[in-house]
Length: 151
Image (cartoon, rainbow, N blue to C red; front, top):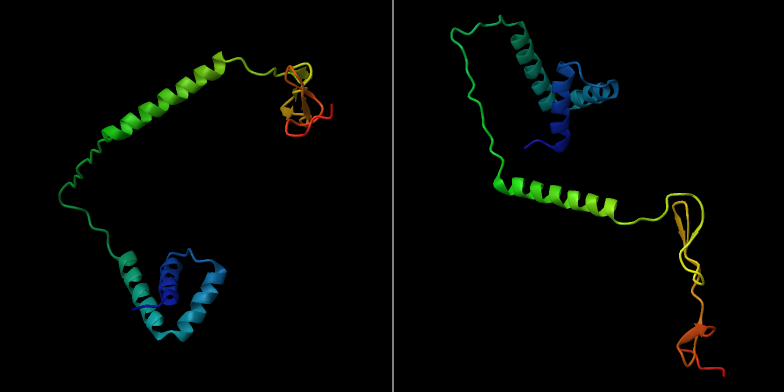
């Protein structure tokens, strides 16, 4: 069984025969071939086979060669999934165009009078929450709901 290193350098032999090996890789290949007799033998056999194939006379076929067409059917589930995705995208597009959105201007827009939720351009600025104090009618600005009443 070949080592991983030898497998890599045998691939380098093939690339070198095609003239596709980088200069650094060529130096590494030469160094490996100087040390490894099995890879050196492989390189000589590959070079011989490549030379024979490249110098051989081209043969013309005596009869026509036909390759049958391969028809691939798309599975029904793939079509259903694509249709469902298209419907979801269309529904999202309709929802985004129909639903009212924030103002696109760069001016300041105040959403409520006391809790200043402000939109400036693309940034959303939310103020820090204020403490609330419990009153007879509900909560009012002041202490938090869990704090004891100071009144």
